[in-house]
Image 1 (tube, rainbow, N blue to C red):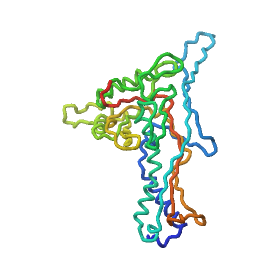
Image 2 (cartoon, rainbow, N blue to C red):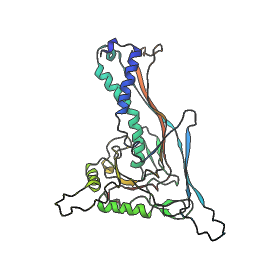
Image 3 (spheres, rainbow, N blue to C red):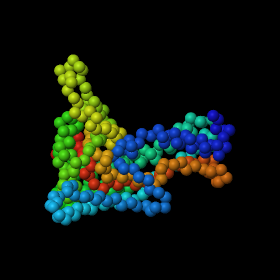
Image 4 (spheres, rainbow, N blue to C red):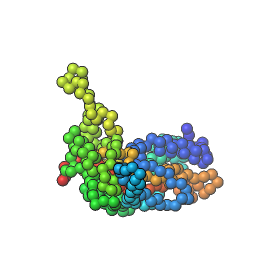
Length: 335
């Protein structure tokens, strides 16, 4: 297709198609992981949302004949307020690109533009886990991002508190081992012993996700644990794999990164368990990634450069209320 035969209206249609193909090709690992609850924030409905946890006590009480039933206790937990923000990036399509048959360069620019907002959204979501041992981090734009939970502690802590009891819980595995059969059993013990409600009572929650970074050794270890089988003639033939079908393996390719998205090998061994059912991590999307393009009849062409400018825009918020639904190890062997 020759760009010198295309007017602005046709070019914008073409740009929209290429942009959407670029956006659809993005691997939004965090958004589709089940670790986050994704909600739509309608237009003209305010720029904040408050999320709170409310627990009913876990058990009913004995009722004697003709006795009045005990009233159930309800305890409001902690709250977090999320605030919307926007991200953006612009590119120019030059006169030369449009008129000198540089179709491949135009496609590359628009495809890249289509991925930028979705990539950034996924990076921001993943960094809630990447920087989950801290109470804040400074992102690539120099903004301080608050990563505290409702109890004002980091996502991963050994002393999380609840509102209706003096009991605390931890969601960081002691000594932070790499993933293995033994450490996975240790993480499961953490799930059993350190998953409580606002009254300090043990909660029985299904943890269905095991998440890792994209470190090959860690990935292969998890795959061996979840899928290993033995030959019918092998010594262990007929022994059932107790982990088969127990967890869904979520690989987060942006987990082991710096705030700017560069590789951070010190986080390569991060892993953990999570409950998609009980997740209190929220992504609120106010503005899905969209193409901002020039329109026919407007001042669409830059007077000085002859460029047509295209841009991507998106708006969302991210917040996490509590840490009871997720357990974590940094895999670095620190106490």
